[in-house]
Image 1 (tube, helix red, strand yellow):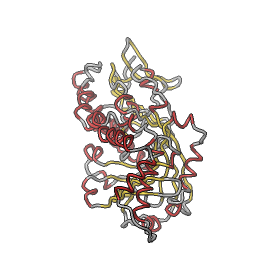
Image 2 (image 1 turned 90 degrees about the vertical axis):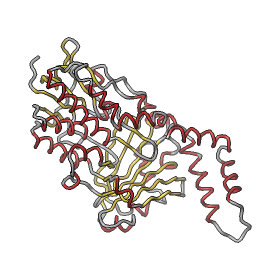
Image 3 (image 1 turned 180 degrees about the vertical axis):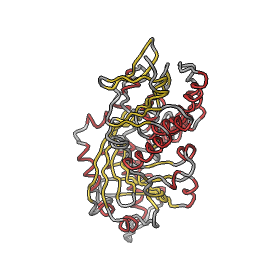
Image 4 (image 1 turned 180 degrees about the horizontal axis):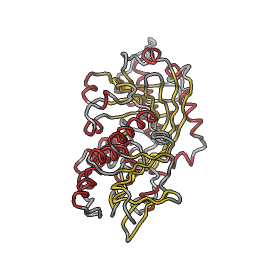
Length: 427
């Protein structure tokens, strides 16, 4: 099959757009295919962008990208059915490694437009159904009845990547290795958001929740502040959700109406509702990233990391997209798009923070499946905190006895020690 393009990038999310941008800047003839009506229309995320990966590709991008708020407050909250105990961090040190809240429809459209401006061709409303193979080598993609050839294909088509699966590079993930994420965007005036979250003008807050919000299932909740809206939602292990009597839509509504969240989201007008699957197996669920004529990046390669206190996806996606583009540029110079010719992609990933972090936290997915994290320990934290701060004139117990009593009521010291050790060695 003749190569109509030097490279076809399937998917116009962060991974695909960064790859297309980098290739186009290098002068390659690039086609980027997006199944949505516009970049970002099919993409869902809680809304947190760690800036470092894109800064390496487009220095100073924050001055032009449609970012919502610079995150200046980080909060992790343990929820029971009526209580909330939080660890809140507000520090200028957070600004040394900036991160932003984003709305994907706007951000992805901007990033894809940067790829177009660099020379890439973007085609929307087309789904790439499968790779075209000749002699075991990927030579293009088939979109319905149309076929398009390329020297190399970059699969950036998300967690359910058809290209990676049909090329035999990715196995079907078990539901225990996937999570279902759902997000609501609630519109609120800018001043109301800043007052409720105690933010300076333009500052943003990132809240993560664990406990009651998932009814004891592995997962958690999130709430991010945008300029004039809030992104609020849940991520729940797909296998646990399938076994439970709960519907995700009801869980989200209960979360939104929780007595400790109600005042934060009060009067918010629902303007967006979306859901998607998230690969959460970490290193164990990663696809083979390279084959003859094919590279796999971002969610399609399983490059997602959840440590419980950070949710990483977009920075991994952008870094892998950039690494894939570098490998293609090197392969193009010698005209070798075989697996060996594209093999520098693996080397670049291995040297990057992406693989280093996935290796460092390879035990995290299994540890985070521990149901006690979501059922017992929020109650333990609540018991200790409410005893410490409650003063009613009765004789006070020392903190060690308060803690011992709470531990005994929530699994015992031995179980807590075992879980604590596993957490320390996993996270």
